[in-house]
Amino acid sequence: MKIKTMKHGFLGTDQGVRFDVDYVKAKAVIIPFGMEAHVSYGAGTKNGPKAILKASHELNENDEQTLQAVYKCGLSTLKEPKIPKDSAKAIKLLKETTKKVLEDKKFPVILGGEHALLSGSLGAVCEHFHDVSILHFDAHADLRKKYRGSIHSHASALRRAMENLPIKRLVSVGIRTVSEVDDELGFILREKKRLKIFWGWEKLLAKKIVVAIPTKNVYITFDVDAFDLSIMPSTGTPEPGGLTWWQTVEILKLAFREKNVVGFDVVEHSPIKNLPGPDFLVARLIYKMIGYKFFSTKTKAK
Ligand SMILES: [Mn+2]
Image (tube, rainbow, N blue to C red; front, top):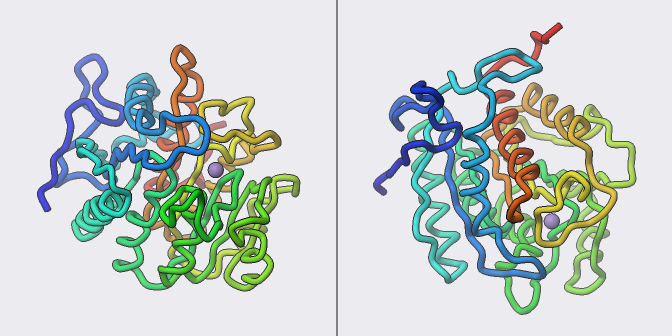
């Protein structure tokens, strides 16, 4: 598979300083993938990657907690491909792309797009690494057997992963809505061992969450509707009672410190015109996560 990168990708250039590197030198590779085959309510996740990249151009290069210039790890952004309308084909394309990035010993960062893309990125991760668990942030469990006739729906994303891939455990954080139909609640009640849910109403302690992950290798899948809708309204099916910024960042920081995070996606961002705040939030989240991957979080700004 041939890799095509884009100029002025994640972080881009500022005042003549280029913040990205050529693909061969990159440690982290941004994969924009605005898949949108199934829509439950609000449409627009296909515009997610573009809005995130645009907002990223306005970010400061230093992380304010570690004072590290995160881009120095080596960032490269792929050109967004033409995404097939057929979900199975789209998933296959993302799987091949992620596989190539992993084979080149780089860290994949997927910008969604709808949650259904997980089967592609995680499929590649599971072929490359043994003993993988999922750390999942979401308002929804996404464990339906199928949804509105489709097995590839975003509402079934984690169910597909649990059924089709050798996932050791799924640890879901911030869940605050489940369905009784399509065997979602039934699955949750049955799969006590391979599944741990930290509900949105619980006191979400980072340590407790990270300890629940049994393996060293972890893939993080982050649905932006995990955040409270007051700070993250730009998503198709928002739910009240979600996570705050620092609460989320604390959990991520510990996960990256204690585990070998092998890749992550950020999905379901559906930008609202003339409301740039959520675009910035998502871009910052991604930049922070890359920083946590490549830099020690032991040093702190005073
Ligand atoms: Mn969701």
